[in-house]
Image (cartoon, rainbow, N blue to C red):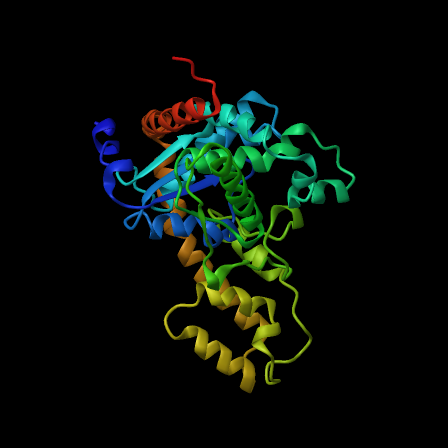
Length: 337
């Protein structure tokens, strides 16, 4: 049954291809949702959409078999819970397309070390004096292979991931110039209004900064996170600059209807204290998350359905990748007839 649904998706749909990747490490937060996940739902009618769960990438930091397996299933559940429809979108494990590893090797042989040393992930790890494995160093090349082998036209990413698309385009150009036109140059898709989702401390929301609000959080966790947001010492009746307020930054994502304008007006004129502002934010975040959390709990009760979605998606993605790697083998001289 699922195979029939999945067969409606693919390269012959006449639509451009949108590819998203998510690393199965840690639980998603609202920054992940507004930064990239939401776009996958919003755009799945407009594009031929694929979402891969990057279990090969995860090996750079996760070397526990059970943890990795469960994390992959968790990610699939997360995306199904936020509204991804497997009738419209292929969801698959990266490792179900082993062709990406072969393609990454071909790209490695055309990419210099000084070029990769400019990558943000490598430079950040180096700055923290972190021991860097080869997988971390080579991460952008494997990501380029993920993107290019599926013929992605657009890739929704957070602002901090834009460099990876630039690297993918550079690698595509170098291959095309060397061996002939083979790969598309993928475009970056960034939602302008949420380029960087603020965390509870005003910095970019990130697990690294311990400033997140989990996407499927219960009400108590939401309350605790919001109440921890630092504010200035101005009283209720004092005028406040909403653009300098860390609570207001999150109101921009969760305010309902004309509520944002009303809150802004009361900030500027005076009459809204920080406690009231936080209570409104708690209410709105809880109302937003509750149906997502309930849907995820329901999906979690049918593990076999999730496994079937991943299996069928993997088969289709494998077929697409195999077609492209055969073309690459022919062009670089690996295929002998």
